[in-house]
Length: 261
Image (tube, rainbow, N blue to C red; front, side, top):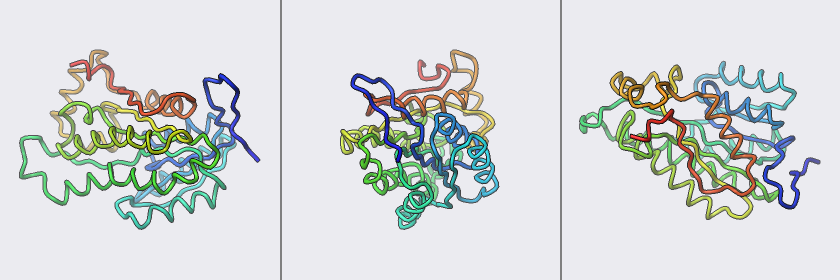
């Protein structure tokens, strides 16, 4: 049976043979993260809602890397479905060592359009981007603790660090996710580390396509590197957090320098 390889004074964890769950793994960033973990030696399960073909493709590419793959349909707005989804992953992979809360939802509502930010939009954004990650972490906590070296990585946004982004609701939800990261780092220590990446604009993704044009254009102008955020850079940092032995409660902004402004 696989046991996490550790040495006294070791700086990184060996992910070979561990099991990971990546929510929203049917495409874009979720797929890049899932494949990054598979390249590091992990078996990977992904969740999906409506884009089944994308999840199938992600699993195919995981299997090409010689790792086990699984997929579970999950709308994380439905809290009653979260624990059974985690149990289904355990049934497929036998264990759970890594949880990546990547699934998200947004829609463009300009900050000044307060009336346009309806109750339904507000609730949808909060339920997917903030409430869902908490209940996924809660459902997974026992499994992540089981071998003494569990990992959670939350995918927030630069919008959680500055008053910007697709809507006030999205910015507030991602700010909450960043602080949830710190709170879970305390709650789950010492067996589980909890960290967070805060990406900037990742052009070409389904999430980016929902942004108002003015948000996309202003983000491009503000980036000191004069480029948008690279999906592979974000995925690589997620894997780095999973490997790190002594890093927890941290948020790393990856946005080509937008946050400097």
